[in-house]
Length: 355
Image (cartoon, rainbow, N blue to C red; front, side, top):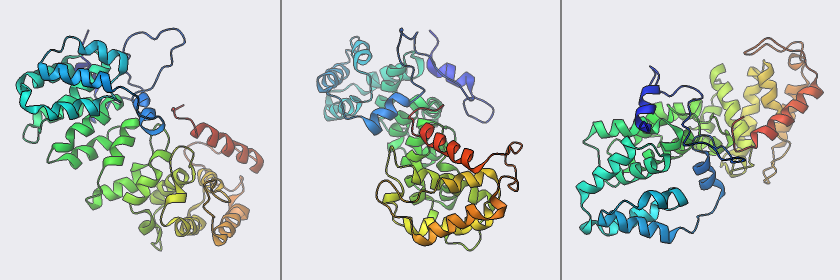
């Protein structure tokens, strides 16, 4: 079978990204087997499932790696996967570093990562490569980044890059180049070290192909949401992205949001103040309707903000006949139907999987 690395490399666009809808199929699905989008199984495992009891399997893999006796490793990985055992495997290999033939281990890992055709074994290879510092080897870095452009492998490349001198640069590059679970993992680890990174996090960091709520609080804190809202004036583009970010904060189904944001009350008040000047399209009305009366997690929306919300929704400029079209021709729609649509949007956004 063709190496996964080569498949990904050949599929890259001129922009250095994988095309929309690109997917690796690791064998045929069994009848009634659930198909996971790239990175979803590991992502759900991290956010919503406890650690599995795989200590014996992890210890076995580590022992085989130290002994350079790797023939039985694929069968163990096939049974248990990599996510829940990899931390213990790497820890035990490090603990036995004096007994490890480093060159043999590197060759084995490189073979898994760059020549392998099994998704889980590619993950294992990336993780083992991450035991070594490749700061002075841009070729290895580039090859790992290529794998990281596929959401299934992004997390493992991010972890592997932890020892590199240019770690945050690599994280930023990957965050801008993936849209699914890989973006969620990358933005979580991205440090807002420069004005460029902070601005990108605020304007582009939150929206993703899984569910924006996973990154709402992260981007609000790292991107300086409250500082942006405290400005007397903001541009239309920034208002649009802040709408997305506020929606994500209000959606507290899967992860903490507005209830745990330090500047929550002020942010809601200032957001709606800016909305008075910028809410001029149907998509903006949709966002205003998403502002809840109160948070289900206990956060109380300020009374001033409630009045501003009502004022926006009641004014003549927000009636369906006067709203500007957004990306597509305006469709006349009653307020009742719009409210129902907003409810359906909430239901769909509560899913862990992209539609």
